[in-house]
Image (cartoon, rainbow over all chains, first blue to last red; front, side, top):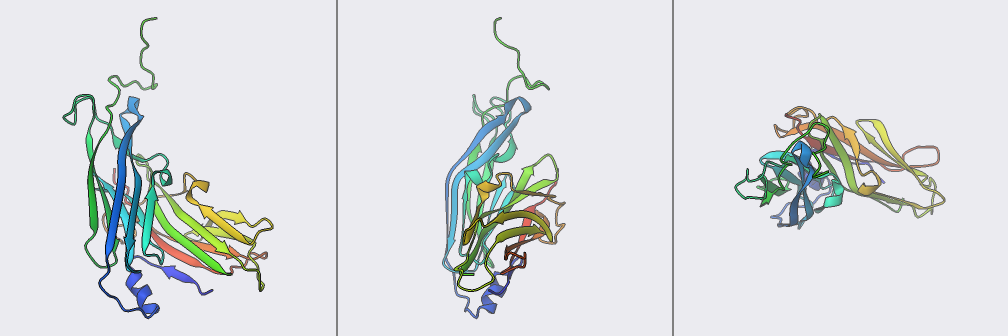
Length: 155
Length: 122
């Protein structure tokens, strides 16, 4: 079996090597259940994750899925001589770290900050298909202690 | 080698407080029909030429790797913006090689993916 090497933005090169004709490709993106959980609320750390994301193209010009939070790139998943990519929450077990924010900081009582989660799917040479979700996190603990413990109740 | 599939390599920040990313694959599968030598004995993953993972075929004709076999993935430095030349949003770009090996650890096949990690920009 001949070695296969995929370089950045090499999908068109791969197609040329395989003698295929590049035609207008279609691309679909499904995103399900983005969520935020308080992973370390005493440290104002939450984690964003996505239940499921899938990007399916009609040909091998498929390039990648990217997830960005508040404009900052957080995950790159590449198609390796494939026309699709699939993501589920267990692929990033601890999620993607964000700031929880304090109660009401995002404008809703009982919640913390909202984060903009962009999931983008790319063909090798076209504008991405983008799914944008605003995900609101639980608030950080009211009192933050270096030892992670909060004072107990009546005792 | 009857079939060899590498699917969806990916990279993400394992700890955003540190310059530490994690590379993983959705899955890798290598199946040997065992009709002709050399026969598959193991599968190795290397990042930038350094071996990071090895899976053995134990009286088997196939090896399957799934991302949840290494839940934390393989740690690498994310790198500063544009460290690998892929753009300001990206840091280092890694050459990730997957090879089914025979009993003498010679590669039967080779797949090499170029995986860009998000930049570390605190």
